[in-house]
Length: 461
Image (cartoon, rainbow, N blue to C red; front, side, top):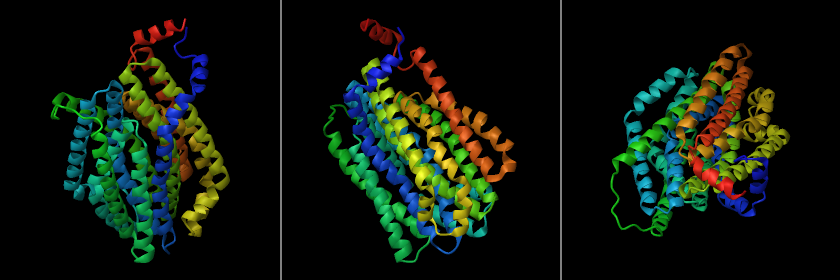
């Protein structure tokens, strides 16, 4: 009997309890994740209604550069989720606390190193990106302000990962809502009210991250009291080595991903301020898509990790099937929404006619991207929950070097269109390689031991 048949998928999709469990985590994360790109859209909208397009380009690039650092450190959230979910499934209160402790130390260390090397980091970035002098000055202003919020940003990432691993999505929902709504309000106050430009947008982001951290710390103290331990937490070197090893693999994966996004911005800068502004707007819509799909990926992470902690094959399979079903549904809805309203959304972001006209030929890419991107997000959720970070790393590296880079050079004569074709090829290759690695990992017993799977299959007759 097959360990994963159409009959199994049908059975899991008919499990109402599994759907409720998935939505209990996915719904608040979906709503809170969707507010994240709204900040970028509001930033762009506020800048897009100023007279010169270089303000919009500077904020788009400055935010992308900061996101590059934050996403590069995304392992702080992802690794914490998988490890804590497994400890939660096994009922290990000590490890629940210790993974939080170790991840927080790592987050603060990364923030300190980044601040120390900040002057050299920004010099290297501006050397790589060949934009106009106005754009470069705006990027410098944004970056040198926003970087002071990095410790809070990284600690927030750790706490979000910890809460999700504890199967609690309500606190991250409120936390991100505080951060993003405060950011929007402060954007309007500083830029439209006080007449600031790029600096106002950056200051708003820093203050918002601090407010989110304060809320999360209060909730964290209360939730930890519900999982008491008798032993004193120690700096366990073996666990720290494991954490660093997983983080190193995920760092390589994230750097490969960021190479793609940064290339989009850098190539846009070469093609002019207006094209660069168009790509900044389109990537904000991509963030809407990715954060929406991440809601169900977060649910899969938490549930897969818990299933592995309990060593239950049926729970693992059901988490994957139901999370995948709702991810596909969400991607189709995104396609329909962007098919009907992309032009309207771009009109909200900017009233610069040249930018709006430049963006029109690229609407089609935003419409089809959800259907290509969904598989990578869903499967990454499985790998994170299982702490199969090497698998994520290998899949991403293949997608970049087999999918994106060859097509990028082959289509360079097609300008910005060629750039987006290469991006879609990258997403497609990421899906193909992830499916292949997942199948191979299951058949090799890397997630649930094969004997456990076979016992379950035999028990069904």
